[in-house]
Amino acid sequence: MGFNYRLPNLNAALGVSQIEKLNNILRSKKVLNQRYKKIFKKCEYLTIYKDRPNSNSNYWLNIAILNKKFDKQKDKIISYCIKNSINLRPGWKLMHQQDYLKKYPKMNLKQSIDLYKRLICLPSSPIYFIKK
Image 1 (tube, rainbow, N blue to C red):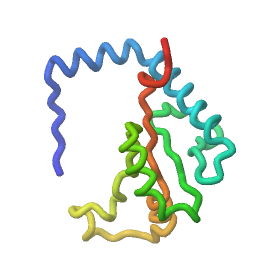
Image 2: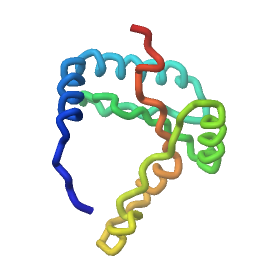
Image 3: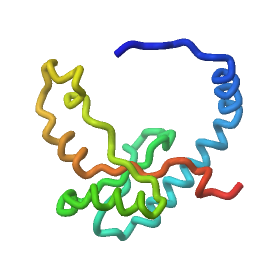
Image 4: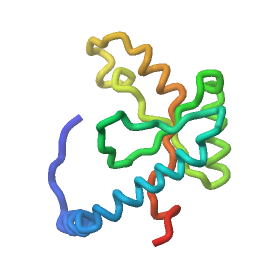
């Protein structure tokens, strides 16, 4: 894997325009995260990931963590939602599972593996959820 730091002018212009809207984007993403927490507050199947105290999230990603007894349902939940136009996805493959990194040493990853089995990425773009 290599790095490509080149950026075409069109992408740079888009980036600058997004920076100008950054505060509104962050505010909208926080509202979306609060809605997820409210909607799923009493749900027995999952919890919405909560930030650590004294942290300041950008709410780039909203994560649902299935309770352990429902981890086998993850793929069914994602498939059902996608069929019903709700774009869920599993989390990213863990680093030690990436083909080009498998040969490197690793530590005990039991907790990471457990979370990966139960983690679902929720739609995180506030564009579709929040009226301006």
